[in-house]
Amino acid sequence: MNTPNITVNPELSPEALKKIDREVAKYPADQKQSAVMAALVIAQDEKGWLSKETIAVVANYLGMAPMAAYEVASFYNMYDLHPVGKYKLTVCTNLPCALSGGVHAADYVKGKLGIDFNETTPDGKFTLKEGECMGACGDAPVMLVNNKRMCSFMLPEQIDKLLAECK
Amino acid sequence: MALIDTINPLLTTGWSKGDDGWSLKDYEARGGYKQLRRVLESKMTQDDLIAEVKKSVLRGRGGAGFPTGLKWSFMPKAAPEKYVVCNTDEGEPGTFKDRDLLRFDPHSTIEGMIIAGYAVGAKLGYNYIHGEIFEIYQRFEAALDQARAAGYLGNNILGSDFSFDLFAHHGWGAYICGEETGLLESIEGKKGQPRYKPPFPANFGLYGKPTTINNTETFAAIPFILGMGGEAYLNLGKPNNGGTKLFSISGHVNRPGNYEVPMGTPFAKLLEMAGGMRGGRKLKAVIPGGSSAPVLPADVIMDCTMDYDSIAKAGSMLGSGAVIVMDETVCMVKALERLAYFYFEESCGQCTPCREGSGWLYRVVHRIEHGEGRPEDLDLLNRVTDNMMGKTICALADAAAFPVRSFIKHFQSEFEYHINNKKCLVDPDVQRAGSGFFKAGAA
Image (cartoon, rainbow over all chains, first blue to last red; front, side, top):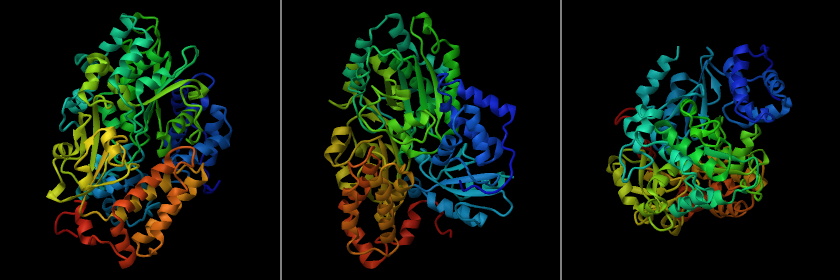
């Protein structure tokens, strides 16, 4: 596991565990592992990223092997196995978005922040990622902020506004 | 965005109020949950219900176009534990209809899933929602709470002896989970790597139990089909292509968005509804059914009607109804490079022909685009696709191959120009202006 050597308390808060319990309750009693995707998201929201220790805490809580949880964490694109900036911006550059400026939007953000894809600004504020189809091609260019907030029609003016909003 | 234009609205009847029309009381006010009530109160038999859906010739709206009623009839009657699963893992580039369905009218999908549960004898269902649309996942969960509080979900629904519950499962970024067995693996808390078929989900699905899995739009159509009758629904479209369909139009049109039209509507009419070509420019090519569908040149698509059979006859697929419109400012090599990268990035790595082949396709198209193409590259690309298609567990390898083969087939001279002249046939400044990102005259 190629994760950086940073010490983070891997334990989850009672609030996070309560949220995980709510997810576990969606599935048959003998299928707790079904909640692992949601549990990893909850853990990532709390910690900012997923260290292997945090992944192990999630796995233990659900009664599954840490490696099985790591397989999930490393398979799906939006889990961060390395620390990211306070704001992770993901820009869709897939073809339908690109036809309406997705690649240009990414270039514009790169220019504004002075970083390339998969880099973080020196002040730790922004990380930039290239995204695949977000299923919102009619709103192109499309960007995600911290995986959960979708921003539509991101032309230069809207990008400037978004970056200014991110304090 | 909310609805812009439609012919024969069914699925989109609730969209007119935008974000203010999604709640339970709005849905009930437009006749929502009436069909579920009728099914339960009349004690309709499972066979009669499935027969009505068969009559409608509703075909799977996720891309494969398999007849829904037939799929439901495959579920073994005697099995004690069965599931209904909805596929809202909408990651096929160009497709954004299910997002709007759940955003503006989540209860039609919920009602459709409950009715499906009744038809196949399932007591539990899951809706797998695309990772990137967290706000839509939240709305769907809120709609589930409303339905549960009103007695449409849970034990003894509306006082009947039928019990069914439904939950949302949120994805987290993997195109492959749109493949139904990859999706089932994902709900089980694993990597979303597809399973061998057979056995099909109707026999061995979620947790190894019989499972019916349909697309969001398919489930959402069910209440409307029962409301108007299967035959009337079929007659909205054309024979073998029943009903209406949502088309997601993206790319170089004046008004990108979702449009609901009867099956068999001419492409030209759909283009007109989307406001025509942006800036009045000339149509070059259209991918009619999501990025996995073969591209069609302008003159071919302009003669097509939008239904499974017409698009198949023209050499492509209606797929999910994602219409990607490209005008004359597009370099077809660059467009293909972007798609090839997507499949390379999203191959789950399970099967060698796909894992290695998708990388080969991307690297070769990339070198052509970047002026390093070789005269033998087009043959090489076609040969690589030969070694991918039909040779893997799921259809992702085919989906990666179709764009490559069709782009080369229809735009061979543009690829050859690129290889011979080490640059785009379409002037880079023209390409840059085509996206509309930069204001005229700005840097």
